[in-house]
Length: 153
Image 1 (cartoon, rainbow, N blue to C red):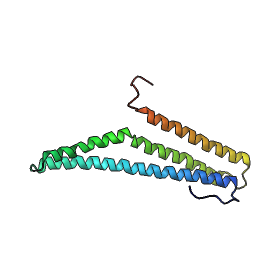
Image 2 (spheres, rainbow, N blue to C red):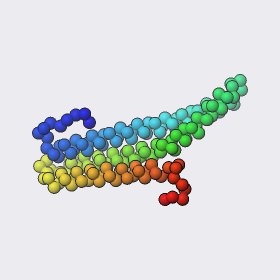
Image 3 (cartoon, rainbow, N blue to C red):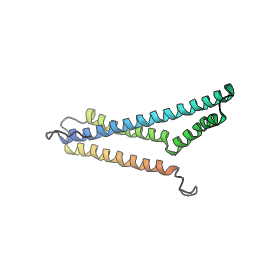
Image 4 (cartoon, rainbow, N blue to C red):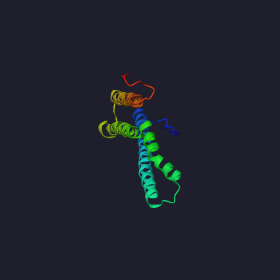
C-alpha cells in the first residue's frame, strides 16, 4: 500500500486500486492463516504418532520425554480453538470473495466512462463489505470469549 497513484488517475481507477489492494491483502492473510492451521494439524498428528511410536516401540526412552511430546496435541487444539484459526481463515476468504466481486464488477460491468453515480455505488458497496465483515469479525471474537458467562447472549 506504499505506492501512490498517479495524479491523473480517475476516481474509478483509484477506487479499483484500493479495492484490489484490500482484496489481495485479505487473500494473503487467509492463506497465511490456512498454512498455520495446516501446520498445527500436522504438528498434532505428528506428535501424537511420535509419542505412540516412542512409547510402544522404544521402552528405553525417558517417559518424561514421551509425556511431553504427548502434550503437544492438546496444546495445538487449545491454540487453534482459542484463536479460531479455522473460522478466521474462512472469514478472510469470504472478505476476499466479496472484494473480488467488486473488482470484477469494476472491470467487467462498469463502462470505462462510468459516471459519478455508478462509481459512488461501488464505493458504497466497498464500505458496506468492510462494515459487514468488521461486524462478522467482532461476532467471531465474542463467540467464545472465556470472560463472557455462558448465559449471556
